[in-house]
Amino acid sequence: MALKKGFIFDLDGVIVDTAKYHYLAWKKLADELGFEFTEEQNEMFKGVSRKRCLEILLDIGKVDATQEQFEKWMIEKNEDYLSYIDKMDESEILPKVKKVLKYLKKKDQPIALGSASKNAQPILEKVGLISYFESIVDGNSVTKAKPDPEVFLIAAKDLKTKPEDCIVFEDSVAGIQAANIANMISIGIGDKNVLHEADYIFKDFTEMNKKFLKKLIKK
Ligand code: B16
Ligand code: MG
Image 1 (tube, rainbow, N blue to C red):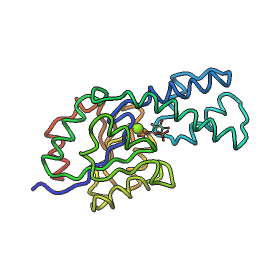
Image 2: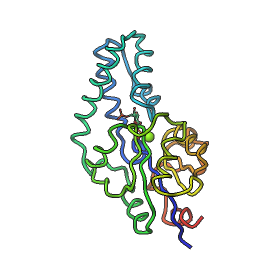
Image 3: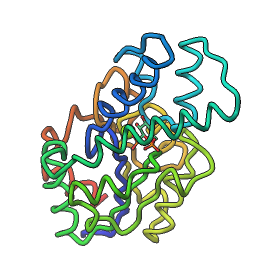
Image 4: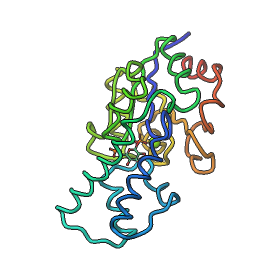
């Protein structure tokens, strides 16, 4: 029998690849401050809050900042990042994501977003997916970052679903850990060597078939 589960999606790395825009904006700041910031180093920033990213960036560049400078650079980075977001459209949705969202909606399954980003709402609007989400839990709604399960527990509450009936799609290790701590089913999207703590791992949504989704709903 089909049951009502709670499907929770991370944003960056699951629905869209905004990591490339985060990278360009952090790199611009690093350039201005006079040090190199590589794409490999940007990997550490995935799923991490904006504030923590800046702390790590300044550590990399061995730059000391006053509180005032720190706040200014946070704003500067975000303004630059938003200039990329402004140009986003439907074509930036990662392969087969919309198909999965459509299928879950057709099956009457509640869907939420669980992201660290404070820009989640405008991004979902830009790519035209906002109407699929009953709840958007993002960087504005939480006090504790992943791997703390707060973001997913709020989403479960919003969807009126017990944590053990929730399924989380995540691309970051911290996000998988957060889902596991919350006692939810964790589905890693990305590299199986990196996301090995997940209950299931797929390279991307093109690898996930209807049979698997059906199984999740019936479980
Ligand atoms: P913002 P996710 C995360 O998104 C990004 O992966 C991470 O790189 C970023 O620093 C964080 O959002 C905060 O983003 O500056 O827009 O508030 O993967 O949690 O959807
Ligand atoms: Mg992510």
